[in-house]
Length: 124
Image 1: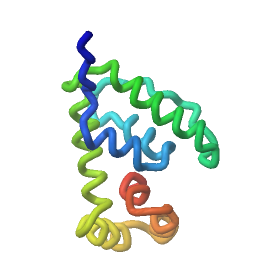
Image 2 (image 1 turned 180 degrees about the horizontal axis):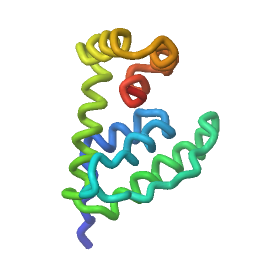
Image 3 (image 1 turned 135 degrees about the vertical axis):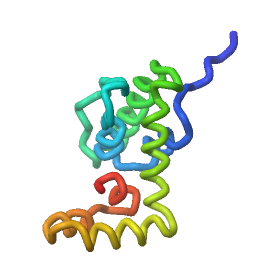
């Protein structure tokens, strides 16, 4: 029996695997237009310290998104690619500069409190 190829693109998968699950879920739940589907992602984000529950939540995100076709997932893939680009190399410097110049102090502090570059990029 042939195995069905996953419609989920590499940037969405990397976001699910690498980002803190609450932020990954939030990024994937964004809809920039009415033409984007509501993925109805699981809402009960587990305690981040519970590694088994976090891994199960990551798998639930993958399973939920696997029910959609590539065209439905394309906007999420593009957003995930942009998020990951801003979390790497020159993107980190650019994002930090923009945040420091454009956001008020409390927002800038919240940005800098994020645990890593990927979390900062998603937060922004």
